[in-house]
Image (cartoon, helix red, strand yellow):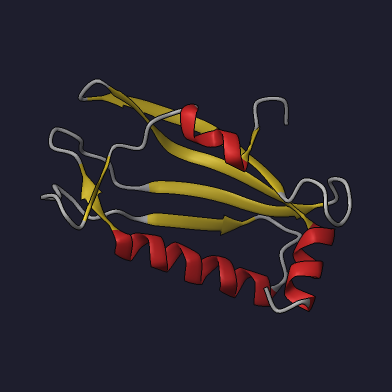
Length: 123
């Protein structure tokens, strides 16, 4: 995945123009996860809970932005074993609205060894 970026570096790649609860939102924020393999049912539940949390925190988009949401394909794969890279992600499609480039779809890959280790530790 040459176009992916580590999670901590993703913020500068594309803007997600969103409004938090302190501003007037224009539309609901929808985060759709597609699990494409390598993530156990219990791990999928944790990912789903995280998506629900962020949908509750992000109340919509900035004025002038009309977007149905973001769809992310999430998968588990062997990256480098426990303790190295947890995951990598990047946009796969975007749209330009109100002066911003906005991700519409993306991909996330997580190291299966790290996922199993985190789950085993109750993290």
